[in-house]
Image 1 (cartoon, rainbow, N blue to C red):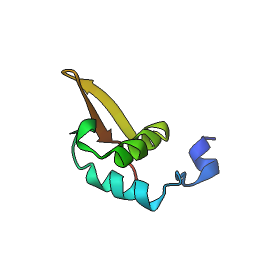
Image 2: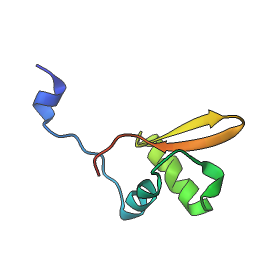
Image 3: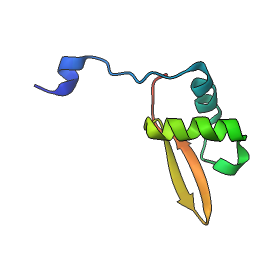
Length: 69
């Protein structure tokens, strides 16, 4: 038996602020283009594994993972 069979649907709780920031990520974007508040929210989303941080040519990019919100 798989864990998905037991749980059904697995969701991660997000705030309205987090959802708004995730919706801005339609493509990989430099972290420095976001406000300080949005960067703090993005760090929380990285910890929740909803957003990935990628280092590319001495620039830190953030990219939304495939999620259902």
